[in-house]
Image 1 (cartoon, rainbow, N blue to C red):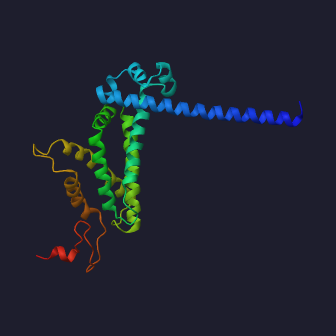
Image 2: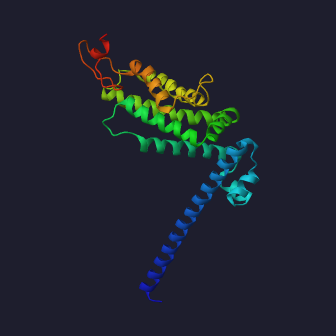
Image 3: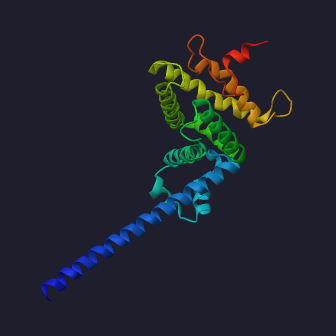
Length: 241
């Protein structure tokens, strides 16, 4: 065989092998995605710890051995499922963020409205989070740590921009816990307000932001007129009788 023919043939074999590997990777990703979707569906109906691996595999259309190959254990499947849900919510929050000119409270408002809408559309996610917290505290703590990093990063960015008052890293970490804890109680608020009708997401979010705004925003210098992001009024105008 001519030398150049051998080179061309070898190149063809390498290209064919690379194409096959890419196709294999794509099938592997698709299989993992189907298994995760099936696990979420089972968890939504009966709770994750009541759902058998066999039912999850059947729902995904794969053998139990395939499920075990991709995830190894129920715990690893739960860890992956939790991570995928967090990633999905974060992507939705990112899309919903106002432009860069928006201040911290405008972005917080937009994010909270998306969060409440997301949980209303996916009520089983709250139950899944409760199950994870009870049965797999390490997985739950890892997810919480990830959210806290997000909140600290947002606080840090707005402190640097001057839209929030100065805070050191320790206080930002504490504030991040408060902000994350609020999400839990807002979910509870969606269910009942002392037996009264739920006032609506916007009313709830605005009431919450009115509570935290003065605790976080940058204090104006004496005599400085600062707009109120709620109504467009200045400090001086709001102090008038």
